[in-house]
Length: 196
Image (tube, rainbow, N blue to C red; front, side):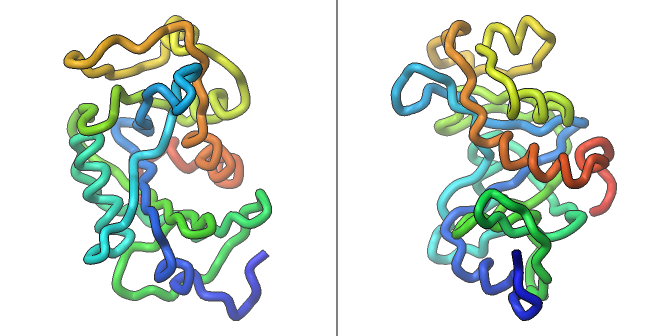
């Protein structure tokens, strides 16, 4: 749990990676592609490593553009949270020069954002899963293959210029699990896109 004197901006300055949970037309896009073993399909956040000249927010904007072809704007989160020992707790935010992040996890920063226009997988993204609020929660707590996800009405955009992803491989939802924790704390988040 955060101490009363702990400032969220102290974590911001130590961040190594930055990501954005992007609300786009009522869904959250997540990248999908084979994991390192080739035996599962990773479902991961839009984001990556912060360049020396970037702030965490600038990194998140660049990474979302490079991976999903979306231009984003920050949404004010219900709170800035710190993940420590698998528990989320509020942290005061005192950084005046950038949008407040939603979550800090060690040296990673996650922002809440919105975007207009259709996402398109780019760069290393083999495809994008477009997860509703309910699908984030379901995927984070159950096991399913890409084929089962699609057969249940799940939405995906897969790149035409790459080999098809195997439908029988299980989804490994590392990205949606943390967002699911946040959605359980703030159930209205992701239901509306208000709060810019």
